[in-house]
Length: 113
Image (cartoon, rainbow, N blue to C red; front, top):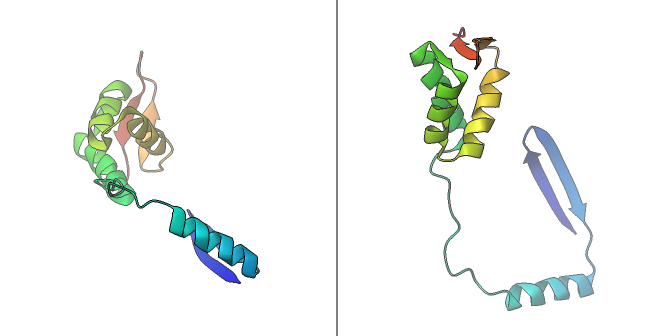
């Protein structure tokens, strides 16, 4: 029996796997046959919480930014476009941020603290 406990995001996980001797033998054989990775796994430069704090600090220090300016800065901060967009969405839904219509692009204002 193998028990795995922890969390996935905010959700608690408690998983029990029951393996018989044959299952353990097959698992062991697979682990022996699997080649070791030739390069170490890529470790993100910034932890998610640090990145989120830096995104908030960016808007807090600016006071107000257009959506395009903010996205451009968040992409630079995060290192890629998709991570920058995720941060922008997270800021949009934050209680510390006010989003107002600003013509072509929304205006993001820091209201928290």
